[in-house]
Amino acid sequence: QAQLEESGGGGLVQAGGSLRLSCKFSGISFTSYNLGWFRRSPGGEREFVAAAKALSPDTDYADSVKGRFSISRDEAKSTFDLQMNSLRPEDTAVYYCSGDLWWRRLLSGQADYWGQGTRVTVSS
Image 1 (cartoon, rainbow, N blue to C red):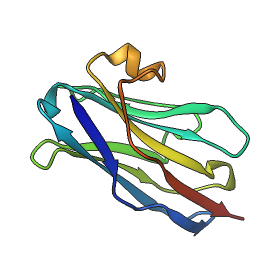
Image 2 (cartoon, rainbow, N blue to C red):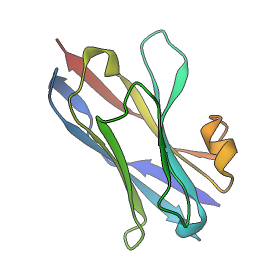
Image 3 (cartoon, rainbow, N blue to C red):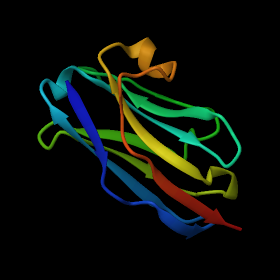
């Protein structure tokens, strides 16, 4: 069992600005979990943003955020972050952190565990 809680970092920012989202994992075996971020834009579907594999340096990113966003995990604190740079108005969405023991299930958007969501608004 696990719980994910997003701890702020969202808000309103101008295009070109940066934000950092953070998610706290509560439960056992943080190191065993694959961790990711998804987002849902207004009127849109939930889409994959970034993921970090358990027990591995491997990461994966949506093409739309490559080179701008970076996912990182802190094993000591059981947290993982999404650093978002060069933000664009099309990045406006509610961002959700997620976790699952299975990599492909995480990437498919069917993770077992989800945070409550953090709103990010990027103005032009």
